[in-house]
Image (cartoon, rainbow, N blue to C red; front, side, top):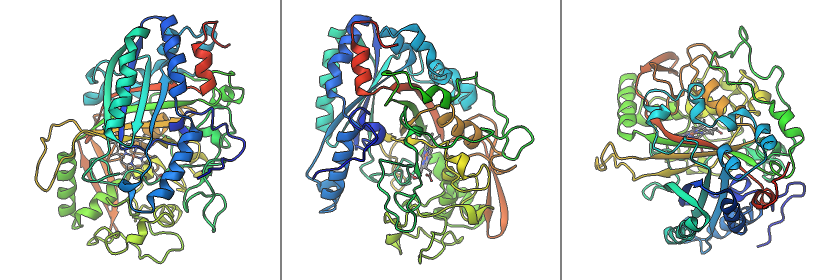
Length: 514
Ligand code: HEM
């Protein structure tokens, strides 16, 4: 099948996980340390031909969808194994990048995730002091992401990369595998479908909503590519950029050291190092499945709703992925009544491409359907009045996560509660500070966002203090306090994922690009 890619975006230059998205069931992250700049540059040179581009991955994903329709996802007779590579700031220094270029990167990337723990709320159990070594330490110079449809292919590709490392003076510091759940494919460990909503990208995502030419899938707004790949047009930037003290939506959080304004930094990307590249945020998030489920069960019983509805009020969607918010122009009945089950049981069509994401919050400002602090509404408030849709669209991320660890079987109570399982959260953006960090610190962790007493994102908020969430239920405002965190940060890092020609430039023996 020939895929025609839209003109204007350099798909052959952009690494494949950024715009295509690997979305493979079997993935491996290799965290590397360079001991010798010359040898490390040779390593970059020799791995570059194996690096998958967005052209390849997009073409494969399109073909996979077409072929997959024939007989379900597992029987699709095509498969692929992909490799991508990204560097920390210390890694770029270890490769010998010129000091002036190193200095030109924004402070968020230069400092790395561990140094930004106060901003992110990573304290207590999530404090970088408790992270799995060496994650978050300056010795991590690069990450190789491998992804495959088949476990054996992934193993072979991983061996191919790791067997070679010593001859390039590269140390393998840590390796982390990610695996889609076999009992509930596509679902994260709390049991919710986790592959539903992504930003649409102009020039990448086809406009497929007959009712709205500015959307990809119905409900999926199309954004400028410069939000995700450096060197392209960005969304109109908000003025002022964030709510100020005294303004609605202001949330006091520790102020990070000033970064160059993203628009200034990216308007004239330093060729060829950053053009067609993207920043990658990695977070290793451990999930305490039995504790989360006990909480859902207790709160459902205490407030007279089904477990399905209580879970959906916390996440913002039902476990099947079915929306809790009534759909636009859609005959499927409003959902979320206290005694309701998951609506996808009676209305499986709600999970179709045309329905599953086709909602906004504008008609639900008080959160009667999706509470304002539910995970998906905190992380992407759509057209909610605060902060307003135009600003919201400047804080979007392309999520590329994959689950890790064995499932906890709630019915059979199998699997030790303390087994390590969770999400390898990966996301791409052109400004870590304005996108991932903003979402985590100003929205998710901030109980006064969007309005006072709305509460914390009950799924991923960090900070050890007592947490709470307000859930309007049957006309009553129910305020639930809780002190546990079900999701703990056990490692993380900020990477820069260069274009293919920047990889070639980085590997050159001559002085790297200025
Ligand atoms: C273990 C940790 C996490 C779990 C269990 C989790 C779970 C989910 C689920 C079930 C969905 C709904 C399905 C979908 O739209 O794909 C979702 C959506 C989303 N999550 Fe998370 N997530 C986690 C971490 C994070 C983090 C760290 C962030 C960013 C700071 C984040 C941001 C988002 C966003 C932006 C959406 C899409 C919202 C929308 O477009 O409506 N998530 N997540």
